[in-house]
Image 1 (cartoon, rainbow, N blue to C red):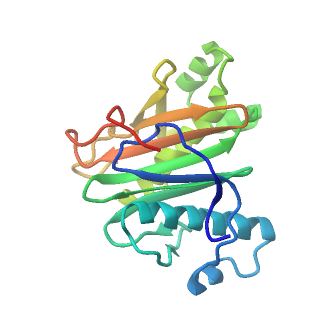
Image 2: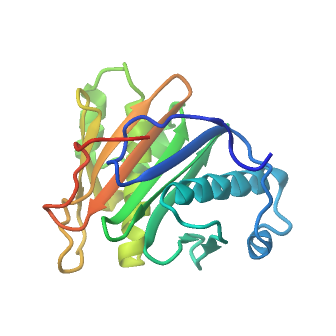
Image 3: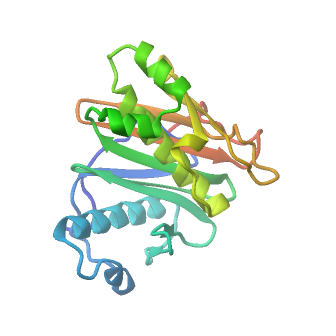
Length: 233
């Protein structure tokens, strides 16, 4: 098998400048030799997750016209993308996906998927700010809002790190959900570099019977493409 099997159409989480490939079937595509070194000695599950994520990423890059190449790994285990590209890789139980975009169109992006399950009170206390917890307490039970909050903050971190190269804690991010529009607005509560609007992190979310998926795009500036533009998956 040369690439991701059982392709899965990710809902409209990103604007059309972002290429996304997702799958519910593991890939058996061979890794590049230097990528093999990243998972040498890892357990089989880790090897499958890594290989399938990289296969999704290469397929997404192909949609942008980028030739197949090794996708490196930085000191914080972050993917190293080809020049001129930003991107994000995610996986959870029987789901793998990658999103990529030209840096000429998007400053950064984040993609996260989580299995649908209830978070423990201890985990929720760690990830939710007091005002977020009050909102969760009042929210309906039609959607797994606790897992969506966790995933949204993970997506924000994935979009933040390539810009700042610094840690971003759960307590540094405040998320407001719009249930009707399946979107969320983010306020980053620590200092951001000049030219980066702390409120520039906007996201969309999806939830089904088995998983939640969130996506965040940081535009080049306030006039750049927003998440309410035309979409492709």
